[in-house]
Length: 414
Image (cartoon, rainbow, N blue to C red; front, top):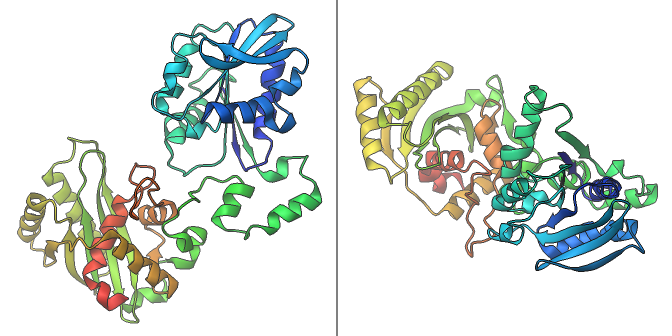
């Protein structure tokens, strides 16, 4: 299994096509698979590949045609005729096109745009291959994209721990500087289009994993350090009081806590965050109560002379709020437990963006959940209204908790 990930125009697909074509010459398997997000993109990127595709390597001994209802490239190889099936993989029912087939090698471009059912079906269609090979390429996606969690990073971790056969998994990271066909002048022209250090530069030039399209908080994502403070920062001595936001989880979402310090000079600083880990059915009200109590005690330890004023909780879970209120009273805690205002999400986001633009928004270095959530949150392009994408590729639960902590004070902050 070979994975090429990185910058655009870095030569990832060309490298894979070259190796795929070389192995195809003497492959013992007759049928092979080439996929993209669509059949058209597979033919364009793998078949043509800017003049370096399969039709170029086998010029004079290949022809486009059809095989069992799919587009294909029929190739006269040293071992005999070999057929490469071209099809799309982005749709939920894409796998139906290849069901029942047996393929030797599989080359896929833009694998991050493939539906999971297609990936699983393609794997199963190779189980009887005489010489099994897999070639995936992709431009960087959001760091939490399923393709990393369920496949690439999973296999990389297992390979590192010695749990896979030797040389089973090969990974290559590409930057635009790795492409010898991009001359010095053209490289300067390309670099001139980007602001060094920006999210787009990191993704398109350096090939780093980061959310770039439709970022909700682009100012933060491009320079998190600008908003970062430590406990020893002078800013921490300017805290007037602290509120806590609580977002209760359900189904696959998480229960999260966010502590927001209101500053005398104006603005806010997120000073602590936390999550109640566990799958559905593993987290009960008592577990939430105990984890919240620990969260509050840690804040009292760090900010001994600062008032903990309110904890505003997700208003849709009244029984959890009542349970939490009773628990904290029984522990002699003075923090008041209330409900979130549930203001419009776009208004909450606009308040955060306004604070960032005016230099009145800070995040403590210890708040890894918040820092990650702000960096990776993107808009849901499938919706007509502006809402954050909620498909578990980014942590919006911690952002909800953060916003609950200050939303009742937005008129004062903006």
